[in-house]
Length: 450
Image (cartoon, rainbow, N blue to C red; front, top):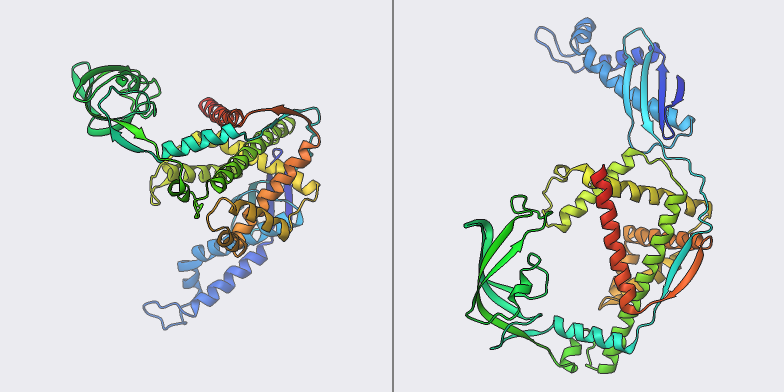
């Protein structure tokens, strides 16, 4: 076997392989001989069909079968001998495939990039410092009260936060439009569930009142025939309901896992949950800054095969998020909607893998268990969660990957200049939300350019 490898780009290789004709022809002859033993053909007894007839009838198919097997086997040998690390499957094409001639085929493949990590030294990373105050806990408990509130009909005019029971019908000009009407719909003013400007115009409305509301659909509205259009809604208010907040008593706190109804235990539990949430927000904010710096310092080529794998994964996530069903064919979703996000994820993954490898990072079973126990704290039966994770190799592998990623970020953080910034609980959560929205906008912008 003769092998030559050409470098066609940083991450693409073109392998040309030649296999002696005798090896292929002998394998084809042996395969035809075996096949002849079981061939039934009119005019001949089983196993007595002449080889010339067998070759004429089955020769092409058998040769294609043998050549396919030979190419796959020699391709694997070629990448092993040349220490190539393929990313995805190759494109293999036979360029010479004739009896009596050496078989020649070409395999074009992408390989994982060779990475020489550049330092992120000099990068300034802001690390929020936050403490959960008593007022933060009071505010959270008030939020929990609102989430568990009942609605009680009131005789007054509607205010922000009230729930209205309404009928409505939408018009473009004088014509009603499809999907623009409903009866007995419950709408909470200020929820943001309707078109911008709709809910605000219902403040002050009373039961039995009819109102005419004018709004303009956003330019990016999902229904293209309505995007940017001015519309009029005729609304009938049937009922105005205000929130009836529950008392913070033993009955209330038992809903949140405090079985004995102890108010101090409940408050302590809320504080722990908020502290954990704030800590996660801080870690994510720091991690995002570090990973952004890592990407900027290391522009690496990314194999298209890996981008496509990640794109397919994002498609499945999107289908699940929007409730499209398990039978939905995700190939219907355009690749370009996810390609840039997928490329960025793959880049980060490759770079982090190199950080882990170059620093010989690892995670012990004790570290994995400790991480699982930390994750299990937010569940009502932590011991069952720990038992499930530790008994499932796939789940343990996922936890180990998360630990290694944390260790890699910590290693990178040693190269950066860390500046502590005091923030309130609300500020750090708001900053995390803004970062998430900014990332979404950036991905959308990149996708639109693509």
